[in-house]
Length: 244
Image (tube, rainbow, N blue to C red; front, side, top):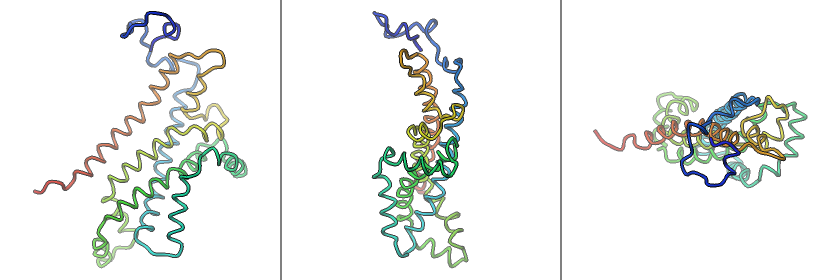
């Protein structure tokens, strides 16, 4: 990355002098625990993804296949969670987390991120489950499979591409979340990378080379995760498209 002083000089070059200005991982040489922050972000993002997919899969299967009292209002309540901005819930959630002892806990961030990400995954998976022929499940029931076995052995493999798409959305939600992470986590060692990245912006000066370097390092894991999930999405969509 180009040093901050060179960025404000005149006659900028389209192609910088790499031998003199290239310092891609300068953020790793600072006195900040950026790698620790990245690890915290990974814990929150993967925890949010894992918990959201489990809860969303079971809820989507129940809403798609079963009839029960309050099914319509329950689906609307899941949808209504997307109408509320996060800023509106910061104060009540902060009070709740303080009472439960979840402040300065990465597990608390996983829970609150799951509350916002799970409904999105739920509707993605419900649409996929709705398209599965019900006769397949009836055949499995005749063979003695329990509802949980049908969900694990038959439904989950068939909706795997949709689960991969939901995983990408929930992972990005947990990885990029900033408002709750900044409000609920006060211990500097427990910060996530988004909070740590914002801390580089100072009142009187901002080391742009460090900020750009940190932003690039922060982006790489999310891009890698998307590329891995993209292969599963594409392979699932194209499976069975060619006979023989």
